[in-house]
Amino acid sequence: MKNKINKVKELALKEIGKAKDIAEIESLKVKYLGRKSELVNILRTLKDLSQDKRKEIGEAANKLREEIESGIRDQELEIRKLEFSNIEEKERIDVTYPGSVNQKGHLHPLTQVRYEIEEIFKLMGFLIVEDREVEDEFHNFDALNMPKDHPARDMQDTFWLKSGCVPRTHTSSVQIRFMENNKPPFRILVPGKVYRNENTDATHESNFHQVEGLIVAKSGKVTVAGAKSIIAEFMKGLFGEDTKIRLRPSYFPFVEPGFEFDASCPYCKGEGCRICKKTGWIELGGAGMVNQNVLVSVGLFEDEYEGFAFGFGTERMAMIKYGIDDIRLFHSGDLRFLEQF
Ligand code: DAH
Image 1 (tube, helix red, strand yellow):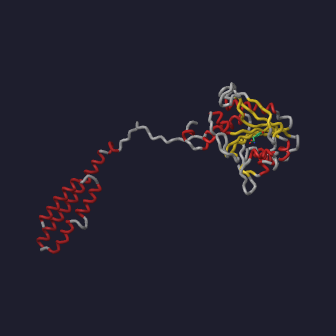
Image 2 (cartoon, helix red, strand yellow; image 1 turned 90 degrees about the vertical axis):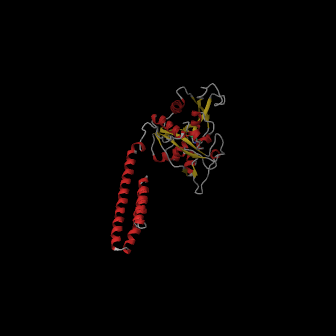
Image 3 (cartoon, protein in one colour; image 1 turned 45 degrees about the horizontal axis):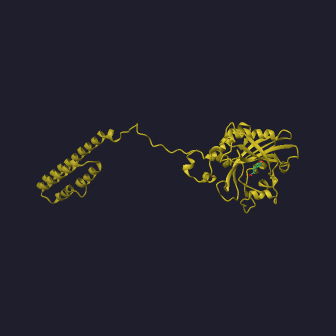
């Protein structure tokens, strides 16, 4: 029995001395002091021994327990000391190490251009107005002097909803919404999404953006000359100080007289190049004196007020500004494209 105790002691102390971490120490505690350990086994057999033997072996076994326990305590201390002596090395922080930088996003190019356009018009006293994207027929067409059988409706074919409403085909509908609730004089600028039943190609999308402008005041206060200078200021702000504009007679049901406005090509400065198809001019939008029928449709008396309206596509402005040749890039989600802005 004495022999066995010595063997256990030798083995235990040797193993304990080699333990390298606390987990190892814990399992050695179980192995040498736990319920299934040799030591407990020995203690269990004590009751079968003679009194003398029991005393002798009992004392030896208790001594063994103390030695194992103190061996474990010492080794544990040793391990902890080692851990802490290393801590500076292990947990060293290199403050000069370059950090991992989060990739920052930025506004979509169309949003950037939209904000830029808004800023220019705000400086000229325009109020930025937004309204619904799904419109009824009255606000999208009828009130804008486009009754049911008007051929101009063909140019703005769209997706009709079962309710008889349409995803608006232009932001001009907001002219009507605003005039129903506000008394002139005012100047508003209406950016927003519009929808058309278009076959998608490099210059057409079925979902795109427009900006509508509307100035209304007492008759005699609004002139084409004045409005033209506003458009000229806008074009200079967006494309550069040396930009010129011109109005060409055109037709839109909601204006009379109506125009299309062009800007001198910002690439060739009017010389003629690939972008402007050698004309020196780039077609940008529509404009005109608000047709009296439109003013009457919102309850204003004929000839009491006059207005000037204009509208253009946000994508088109961005494409000209940045030299983008395919409108589909905007909604492609392609980061190689987006990261250039
Ligand atoms: N609403 C027209 C369109 O989507 C654009 C437009 C043309 C707006 C002339 C106007 C305007 O206010 O006067 O094609």
